[in-house]
Image 1 (cartoon, helix red, strand yellow):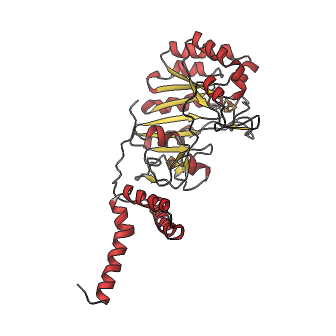
Image 2 (spheres, rainbow, N blue to C red):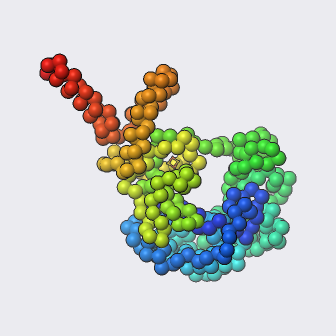
Image 3 (tube, rainbow, N blue to C red):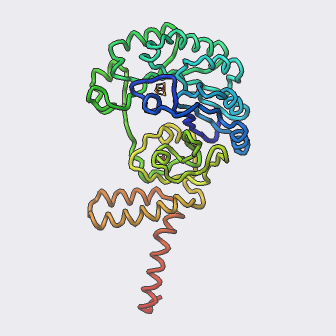
Length: 344
Ligand code: SF4
Ligand code: SF4
């Protein structure tokens, strides 16, 4: 896949499953009927983008949206698609039959308890096989949910026998009074084959491609720079039915902690120029706020940590910004003092 930007679209929060650990399905019952996407408005927005992008569609369960196949068809005419699905809905057959596999990656999420409860394990496996036969690239994610522990080897064995390749991803949440992934025991980590479970990345003031290379979109179609912006509902950029527009500039991260995969996993995909000219409104606002804040911190706390953090930030920031925020005002002060003292 060769793309110049990513749009991560949480298309809907409704789902046909009720996983115990879900943040979208069981706890977010959607009121009213599940409406189709306004395909005309969406296609219009899509056609206005002047680069090739990768659209990641997740939910809830995207396949329960009435016109999801049509939406995916529009995307794959020019762009790439990653569809994240629990692979339990019959409509996937029409998807496999009608869509160009060269532009798609399907990421199935294997939710063992729900598949067993609803007698869908065989279907899940057969859809995998059918997709593969049709030439699709299928990946599978398994959540390392502590409740699966007793039967985990059995499930992996079943997948191996059916040639389903998988990745095991950590569980985020509480189970039996323990907070995961922080409190996985060594034995659990070993059994789940998990290494390096890192919950968050320290991100404040990092220069990040969010906005300029990556956009996220919520269930209402609102577009933001990244998930932290989406959760805090700050600095909405546009709506998917109006336009899908990447920002001209990178983002100086205002958040302490980042869970977004883009910062960690996509940043190497996007070689972005830290010396990009100009600053958009958000970056400028953030810099004006953060730099004096850092300097006040040094004075107030008088800690080497505060000093180090500021120096690190100044060293990383593009020269143009430093000029704007520090050098210019300093020169003005110098001029003023020299004038007063009649010096040259
Ligand atoms: S399949 Fe996914 S969205 Fe649906 S309930 Fe399970 S975790 Fe939630
Ligand atoms: S939270 Fe993460 S993705 Fe968002 S701006 Fe910060 S580093 Fe980038």
